Image 1 (tube, rainbow over the protein chains, first blue to last red):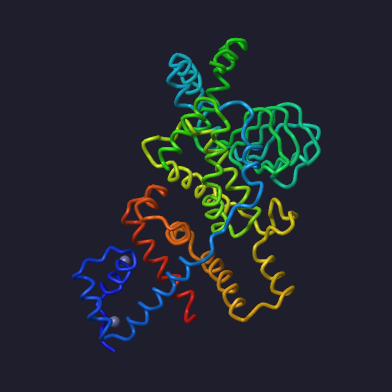
Image 2: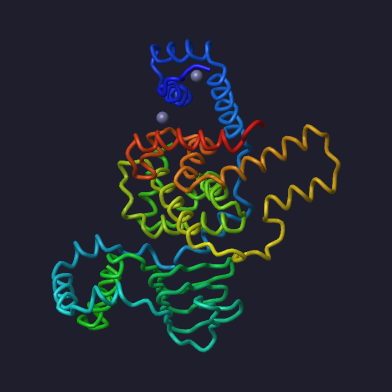
Length: 211
Length: 187
Ligand SMILES: [Zn+2]
Ligand SMILES: [Zn+2]
């Protein structure tokens, strides 16, 4: 058994990606002619690729599209931070000022690890997961922090999950808006909206949201 | 095709929700397949693939229309899958009670109900084997191998989806392929 040049293996992969040059291919073939071990590896690689390429396609189950439609928020597309920032520079500056004045902002996102949630009468708590059981309707907003939320029934209000995940069963309904907050930026955005809500009178806020 | 999709995107942004349904119809199988291959569970794949479309809808404004819509959609879906895999606790499946959704169980049912020709059985086992081997791959190779071979995407598109340098994608395809070869042993 001779010593195999390391680049031969790279040439094999380059060949399989269709990115080998003529010269490289020639060098590879020369070596494969002489070396049984490499020839075997090359054949196995080719077989593997054929096998994985040839596996049957999997199709989405029936009713998939309707399922997506049912899960779309009822209101039109929510305004993301970018557009909102552009449209309300003054509000952004005011909210940012107030927020950053409170040194607790960053620490409140980073340090707070405790599982907490809005107390609503008909929710069930399983470990660190809040469950809205099938057939139940929670009236009002629901906030879950440092835990997951599973919705099987209905929430007649806004849903916010901070540092956790939201799982929606196919029966789930949320009438309000819904968001998950896992990054400092989302957190900033979330806090700014709540600060802004405090500054703007409710009727005006309504107008802002609708424009 | 890309043009038609971008036209639909514009319609959705102008408030036409029905145009979004066409987008879902167009991409449903591809997106579901990625999720199914990554999560190895039909109920979870459906949940995550649907969630990916919901996120795309909600965040449609942030989609850069100069780029390929499918790339953006795949990125949302693969990120959701990776999150789910990381958080996955054993014995916890959201829709575990939905009957007939677990691919592997279905195959074994078919196998016991009808005696199939031996070649057929061999082929079926290989399908399961392929899925099993993909799932054994380390996370960083799994996504790339699925996109490369099961979704049949080009290396550059994979790099765009995963927001990785092309060189990194190439290296990982190499390593992933080599890992699969070793896992398969002598077939
Ligand atoms: Zn050799
Ligand atoms: Zn290489």
